[in-house]
Figure 1 (cartoon, helix red, strand yellow):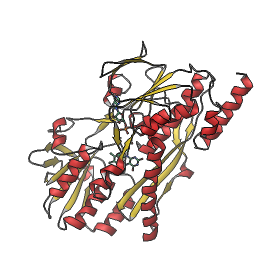
Figure 2 (cartoon, helix red, strand yellow; figure 1 turned 60 degrees about the vertical axis):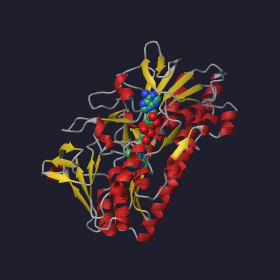
Figure 3 (cartoon, helix red, strand yellow; figure 1 turned 90 degrees about the vertical axis):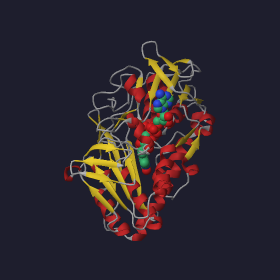
Length: 432
Ligand SMILES: Cc1cc2nc3c(=O)[nH]c(=O)nc-3n(C[C@H](O)[C@H](O)[C@H](O)COP(=O)(O)OP(=O)(O)OC[C@H]3O[C@@H](n4cnc5c(N)ncnc54)[C@H](O)[C@@H]3O)c2cc1C
């Protein structure tokens, strides 16, 4: 392959990445961004969520000659986006459940197993099922795990009684069942986590969906949010939406106003805060978070619990030929979201393809959009584009968009429809 040909291919790839679009399959089929070698290398992607799913598919799109293996224990993935809608009775579990057929059809080898350990010197991975795999580069996207025991009584086993529902699946259904079973004038207590955590508007969308359910089935019930922080994402919009849709049903207590939890008794359903004790019929304790356990075991995380990366390429700052994306990575000021994770997946894929072709890496733009439903016909959103400035991700202030406080009911209705449209398109991009 001539240097000129490589140059052309690089330009084509860069144009497409800059435009934020996928490489058209016709171009991929013609080998335009290929290294031209059938032994282009083996990339292993750990985790089949938004980050891993996007990285695997885009690695294959950008260079079909790469061997790409994804390791994911679950045979179907249940998304956290949309799971608050399920809790509020506005969506079915089947709608938020996706299989890996399309990922396989895109040429990715999907192995349903758990990575037990990674030998980053020998460049091998050990799977719980007993297999060992070699890799040239590995992309780690294991999502989050929880910091238990940060307050008295918050041991891992309490999730069976006070569900966090912060990983979608059985926990989502358990929280929904508890909500359905609570008395008509009952109290639902949410302990919202401290920063940084997965999905900054997530707890407040959940509160909205729970309140929506209560207006239909538990008319006398109320919801108290005990927050581990003093402000939250889209706060003014949420507060306004809560008042308009639910009156005084939702009470939010900031950390310094006494919301800070100091203990939990899961059997008695009591949360103790700096203000006093709160007794509920349902307790939704969402613990503080850290990068998924594998990232901790691999030595990829720092004191914060998350993984420092080169924010241009998503390469780990700790270990060579290891990349960390999604919620596990420190990609601030990007929020930890499905949209961000999918964006990371595309950028890491492009840079790995370029590196493996001996080309310089690129500084691509990242994107995030977060929709939230306050009611089924009342949506709000925030969006931003992020650029690289001096090797760090920085939000382009002029790109920031947030729903207007004075929007009409019709605009809120439209945004609610966009939220459902966003869900369909982002899941289609990864699993469709
Ligand atoms: C209630 C809620 C609502 C949300 N709503 C939105 C929303 O509306 N919009 C939005 O953009 N984001 C939303 N999010 C955030 C979004 O779910 C996460 O940011 C996103 O899932 C992160 O992607 P990820 O790939 O980092 O992790 P995940 O999607 O969690 O994927 C990680 C995968 O890694 C696998 N894994 C872990 N360890 C191993 C191992 N050792 N071996 C193999 N596989 C492993 C896991 O099984 C998992 O499937 C929401 C989150 C919550 C909790």
